Amino acid sequence: MWLGLGVAVLAFLADRVSKWLLIELMADGPLRLTGFLNLVMTWNTGVSFGLLRSDGALGRWLLIAVALAILAGVLYWLTRTRRRRPAAGLGLIAGGALGNVADRLLWGAVADFFDFHLGDLHWPAFNVADSAIVVGVAVLVLDGLFGSEETTRRGS
Image 1 (cartoon, rainbow, N blue to C red):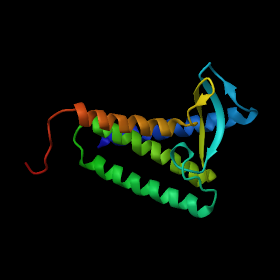
Image 2 (spheres, rainbow, N blue to C red):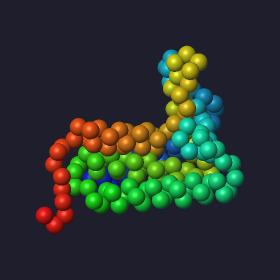
Image 3 (cartoon, rainbow, N blue to C red):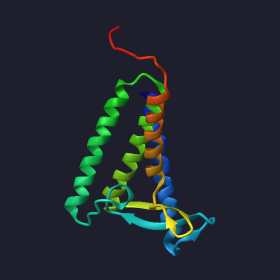
C-alpha cells in the first residue's frame, strides 16, 4: 500500500507543478515544440477527451463527486493489493484523479496542455494527470494479462 500511496503523491505533485508552470507559460499563446507536439491552453469542463461537457455548477460538482467515488474505490483496492505492480498502477490512477479533481475545485475545469498531432489530425489535449491515469490503467491491464500467477489470500 505504501508504494501505491507514494506513487500517488508523486503523480499528484508532478501534475500540480506542471500545471503551475504551463498555465504561466501559456499566457502568451500556444507553442510549437516539434512537428507532432504543441503546447496549448485548454480548459476541459467534461470528462476524458472533452466528453460530457458541462459548463454549469451542477455538472462540475457531479464530476467531482464521481471522481471522488472512483478515487475511493481505487484507494480501497490499493489497501487490498499485496503486489508492487498493481500498487504502482493504482497509485498513478489515484494521483492523476486527485490532480484533476483539484483543477475542478480550483478553476471549475481541468487544465490541458499537450497537443499531439499527425498533420491536421489532433489527439485531444491532455495533461500529466491524464497521462498518469492512462499509464496506471495500462499497468493494471498488463499485470492482469501477464503478471504473476501468485495470489494473496488473507488469513491463509
